[in-house]
Length: 314
Length: 297
Image (cartoon, rainbow over all chains, first blue to last red; front, side, top):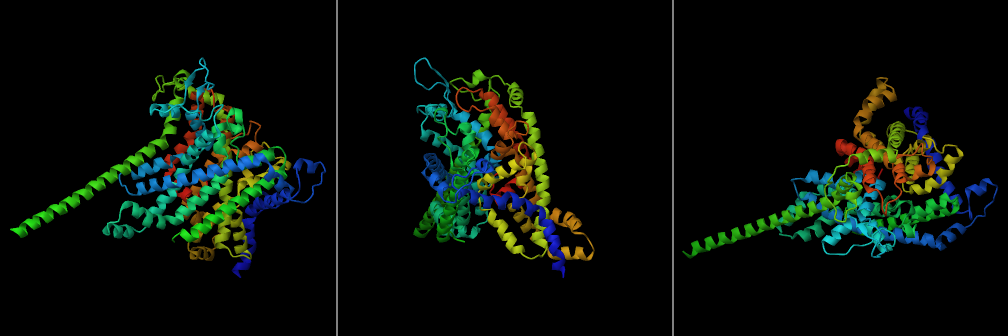
């Protein structure tokens, strides 16, 4: 009796959410699939009365497109480099934080700070730190005013300065800068999750290990990591998902050229490719690329889940 | 005699063992703190560099041997950044969009979560599962169609386009529903017997009890407006409705080469400051909200 009375009321309460979701979430899913499977679909041309054939032409074109492959390569490199580095660093920091009492709260706050930032704004700071003011063409009368603080530090330790992001810089130098920035940016979330996990581990395990005289490295490998594995799996999966959607951090450092001035677009990513296709009114191609991105994320997540099913200790 | 010696020797050995393990413990502590402090300095360095660079003169910034504290403190860089970047207008826009979308989003989230947590209706579980499934899909997939939708609605370059498409977050509904479910149903039934309306019950009982979650949602939503970049660039690029991140990127397009970095860093500091101020006051809620969401912005 109560439930039949509630029926219309529930739908009334849900109406705003459902209407908005239908327009901005459900319809886009259907429409993206539709556009992806219409060869060379363009919204502008459809308005003009063009008719498109059904087929997988968009997918074939996207996969054969060199720019797309470059985007895929850059995205994958960034993912494969940043996820392990940031996870291991975050684990070490979280374990260290968990083992201290004095200053723990303070340091925890410090390590969280990069999260509370705007990735475009702080990207500009990183660009300033790596940037060389002056010329790098190497002729005698063209002087370097400042090589940037990172190069200053390298020179202080006896190294030579590197052209990180300026005209003439190499692809791998650019990638290095991006990896540093992305890891810096990714640490806070991972530390927060892992520290939360560590604090919920039962102290008895450690007491037992202490009685047995187990070494610290062994405790980390045999107790901490296995008991922390659900959280580790979580940060790795979210790290991969975020990594494949990398875009704004590159704009933060390189601007909308997505690369040094003489090699614009060199660091473009999958998401960047989708937006470029959208900007040039090639919605079919953009949709196909978005579905490929979704597929990659899905596969990587499933692999991660499969691996963690074997390794994760609940 | 021999026995006594043995006892003394034994005690000596014990002490030795104790001191070595103590030394090991101290060394371990020193190592741990050293590692943490070095990492903390690396984490903090970009912020430090941003602030001191923003206070330097251009000439001082360009010196080949860097200074780690400005010789002449140039607060005027901030004034210049504010005017060059037209930050005033951008601040107002961003706060407006953030506030309106937060308030509307909270209302929708609360009533939806209430329906899912307290009311019984046909298809509830299927609908909820369907909503959760959409969370897996990357946002870029929606953007392609939404761009067309808002264009044909004539919403381009309005505040509406920055607010409406993102009002419903399945994740927030999920979060709040979980929170509502923890409140015993008896309270609701008792209120019904007393003839209390749903809205009054929500307002008097459920919202106060779920306040921490609502604060977390508010913070995530506001920082979302502050950090949003891609969508505003697509649909509100007329300069009048731009949000802060776009304005910052557009006003300072050059990142490499010979740029007036002190002014640029001042602008970056101005844009970053509100986030830090909010963080200082609401640290607990933010860290709690983030650990549950894992979503930036």
